[in-house]
Length: 374
Image (cartoon, helix red, strand yellow):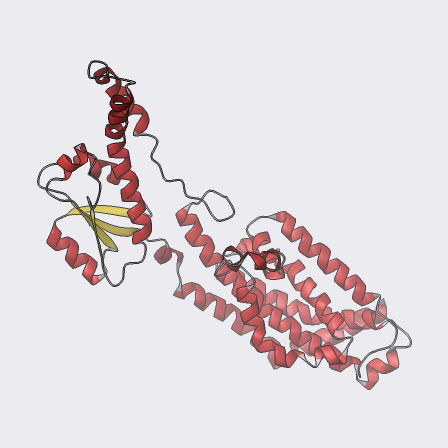
């Protein structure tokens, strides 16, 4: 054990003397911090502005229901037609609703076809969601009238009894038209929290992918070291896996420190602790790859594809499993996905990362006695 400690300290001094290590310690926090400044959560979660042009008479009920739905996600603003067109054209507002002069009359007859005009501009993006909100409000306004007509036509009520039913219809039906938002996996959707979590996932995923590249570079260094005369002389005395552990630990410590600095600079303390099993997992993978020259020598050709695969097979930007269900297992069990889920507080995924890391490191330690440098 004393020899392993000596090997570790020697390897750590070598890491600290390397310019590559200091580039990692300085550049990774700067990159993540810069990305955090370029995409602040406050701008991502700013409310969408939507104009509403009411007729000269009527439309008060429609407006009051829309106004109730204004908040930190969408803000509805009552305005005139000229202002609405100007604001939408300049991109200040995402879209606008234009109500006709006979809005109340057509609403009383339940004539909803082309009742509301949606005004969009070149920069409009979220109008489909806002349009559904307007449709829900219209349904909320007209549902008592539709229900009243149905009761009369079906014979359930007549002109003498329908008057007594109207208050009840207003009370029950107007409360039923609501929009319940949830994520693709069934969790309730808080739009502001979702915007912030999307930004957090992007920054944490960026950190994880950059550290994955570092771990693959470690695997190449270990492979070259196993082929050195020094490692070959030690191979008959110690298992190759044990010989690699001090160098692996010395290389992972700067990566862990750089990752912690990057996450703290980006304001993501929840993702700091899961970085330990995440890095240990890739360290175990690197130790196993270093045992075969054919594997670690092929890594330089694969490195350019690592960021692409990391982005596509993790939900840091887009969960492709929602579009291509066949990718669901690959996305779900991808180490970057497990790390992101652990950072969001899902401890089961953090425990799975730790278990996988322990298994891989144990396999690397129990590897054969002879170094495989050729």
